[in-house]
Image (cartoon, rainbow, N blue to C red; front, side, top):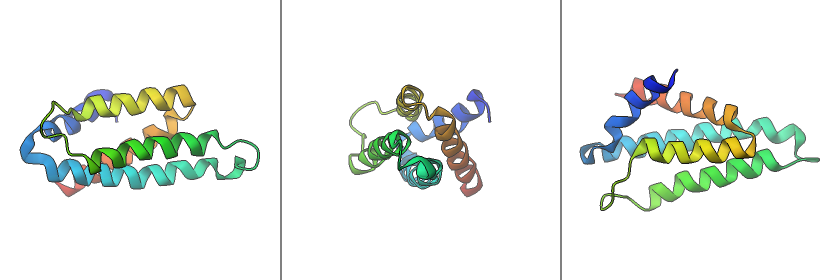
Length: 111
């Protein structure tokens, strides 16, 4: 899945009428992130940075679920870009990419 395909799936989530779909995507993204975080299990005795990074990103996902952004200009692509930057700085961008692709593929099947 390339950047344009990702944007094509995310852009409709910005519409106020798609709040429920956006929430389903965030739930799916959080679920897929738990799978991606498990890559770090074998190194947990010596290096927990992978798990810490996913814990922080999942906190961000669930924070969006807890605080709807109807009153501000919340854009799904901006949120995802913030996650990507954090993942890149933490060295887990490839594993986040797995979670994003899997969550968007699930969203495409739901629609």
